[in-house]
Structure formats: C-alpha cells, structure tokens
Image (cartoon, rainbow, N blue to C red; front, side, top):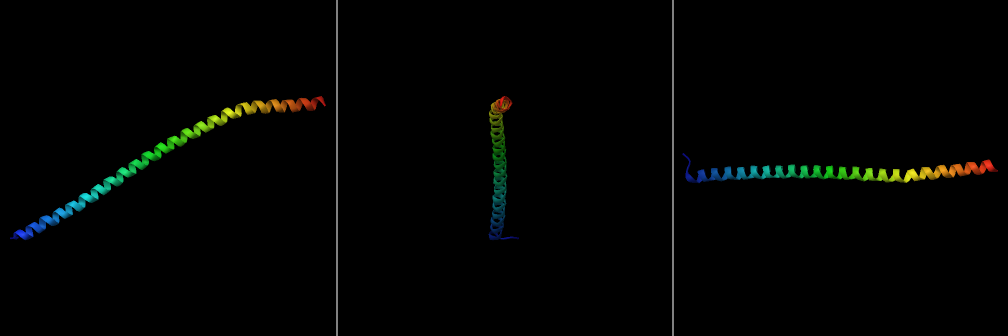
Length: 85
C-alpha cells in the first residue's frame, strides 16, 4: 500500500500533467481563433479590393465614354479638313 507522501506525489504529478494538457488545449484554441481572424481579415480585404477594382473600372469606363466621343469628333474634323484641301 502506498504511503501518504507517495499518494500526494501521484496527485501532484497527475495535476501537473492535467495542467500541461490544459495549457496545450488553450494554445490550440488560441491558434484556431487567430487562424479564423486571419481568414476573416483576408476575406474583408478581398471584398474591399474587389469593391475598389469595381469602382476603378467604373471610373475608367466613365472617362473612356467622353474620350471616345472626343476622339470621334477629332477624327471627323481631320478627315473633313483633308477633304477640303
């Protein structure tokens, strides 16, 4: 039969092992939470980039439309001036 000191040593060892296991579980949970946050940030950034690109594309389209009209007018003017000479 174990004496009282050995029993307490066994309890202490089991407690230390349980605490070490708990620390590992907490570390794993923190790593999972960090990974989820990184994924959420990446998704938010991706959505933000997509919105920025869509806005830039729309701005370019809005600028190109008048430019095409102006280009057509200039081309027509050049053609007319060459026909007159």
